Image (cartoon, rainbow, N blue to C red; front, side):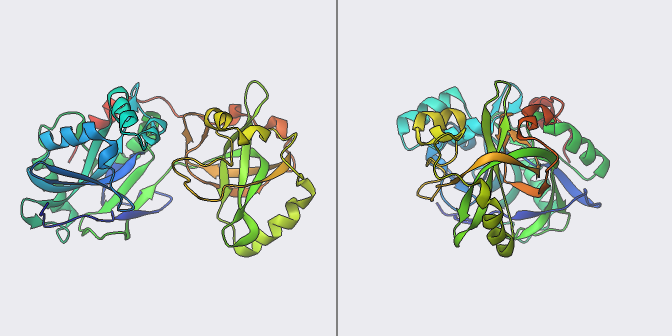
Length: 357
């Protein structure tokens, strides 16, 4: 492979803002695996956000990209999987599997798509120093008439359209809106774009915590919600405390600390089968690797309010939640899934078929 921009490339990133900023190019924020695709003739490489290769996990995309992308190019985009008109991140994570036979089976059962939204090189020309407007025009031309499973990401310069996308596209599993300055040059690993994400709050049961990697202070609180059957389900974590606050939390939570997990609603987390079906905390996975996921069980008597963006599969927080406050006025049993707001359903095909510019 001999391209004007060679792997590994770390993608340009976005910093969070509360409102859609004016005077920019706007795109949907796709909830998948960020990937920079390198094509040089028959050679295809799928780079990840960390620089590691994703190529072996998506053989069906390698074939599709070879057939649909320009002969020599470097394209930034997102690998996604859709089911029933909705992005399915769970299905995407299953694709990262060590067994080639399993990868092949899943490639047939849950084929992936690639949504292209930036162009870093075309032919023999590197485009990293070209303004966004030029890169977008070249990308639109290069992918004119492209067919599934490769898609050109919709884009607009109208903030009112972007606001409609922000409100509607969530129903198809998208994550918000990305805003890009029109004269933006492509800068690896720098947060020069802006992202506007949905934020909601939920009252959750604090049922345990993990220690911080730096020592015996709280790293994250383990959160739970009660399902219709009365079982406390692990729905995610909240973190991002100051070091002073982490130390204070250890003392504050000490009266609720259990000597062991025996009798705890999540006592079965040590059973691998239970972990896979109920998403209990503590067991290693393909994503956690060798990370220490040991946890301290707490009597599930404390409630806190957290902010979150959206749910994954309707069962757990897609990203780490943000602690807002303690809720002494709430009982743990009142913290159920029923409190969660569900976005209005929207078909992914409609999101991909919107006007581009």
